Length: 405
Ligand code: BGC
Image (cartoon, rainbow, N blue to C red; front, side, top):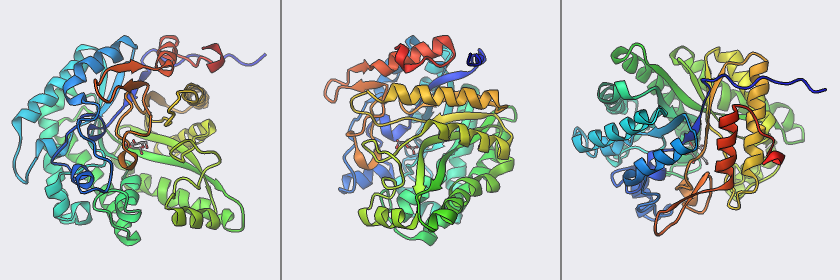
């Protein structure tokens, strides 16, 4: 008989993850807003209108038994122009965080999730180390203003993806395609994380500070290059950030999406098709990313071995317009986390990407990552079957075979 694995501990955190620009709507002073307005990406508009409807969204999360939520504070709202602080926006985020607290939903607050104020980008953004102090001022202000309302701080989101998207592939502002610059931005973000860690801890010594790092399992895509390329990718994309930031994490946030099949011919096809992510997979969903649940197990083990700090999955999800694959993917993820726990990994929470069908950067609203759909006109929220499945998992605190649902 198969061994019965114990449920997750009672204080295991369950919820969803989001980012301001992807759900709030009208982040007019951000570089991504300008990028879209100038025709480089779909127009975000009011989007999910979470800026106005946050209370309704949090009530729904509460009804679904969620115990945590990850959101980001939009830097360009707080500092719309260089040196100008918008107090009204500070008050807004206080209300948002208070609303989560009232509902006993713990908050994970990200300070940089892909977007920067346009004025900061005009100065060269994170390409210039000399600009870092602008972000650090924002970090300090957030620690002072929101300190008692935040449970977990996430300084930066996916430095590897941000550098690759905006400075190597040119898919995000400022749209550069230069591998040296991309690498410089990545290194700088690692040092920005370290400096942010110090800033937050100085103001709030007891608080929990970490970051969200995307981990990918790299396996051979065949051919001779398949022998050494996966190790190279693993080192550059997974290990290096941990090496550079090891001492500045109270917990580690991990974003897991896919397993990549690496070989020279796959990479060449990827770059040619400008679908870099799409070819490094063993199956595609509509964005070309594929997650194999065993990756979560392998990646959690890896992160634990290297960092030896509490781990949280701060993103995992699938764009699934028909909501037919999501339940299976979630079940696989939860089972993999449970296996990792049994093997001694200190995994303490799972935040699904995402609560709402939201603005998915270059693919706009055509991707459907949400547990809850949003009517484009009325903004009415409708929970999907996978949302109900997730609530059942949370109530049981253990996997619930997708066949049982
Ligand atoms: C990003 C999210 C994005 C998600 C799905 C992550 O890399 O942090 O902003 O929506 O992937 O593509």
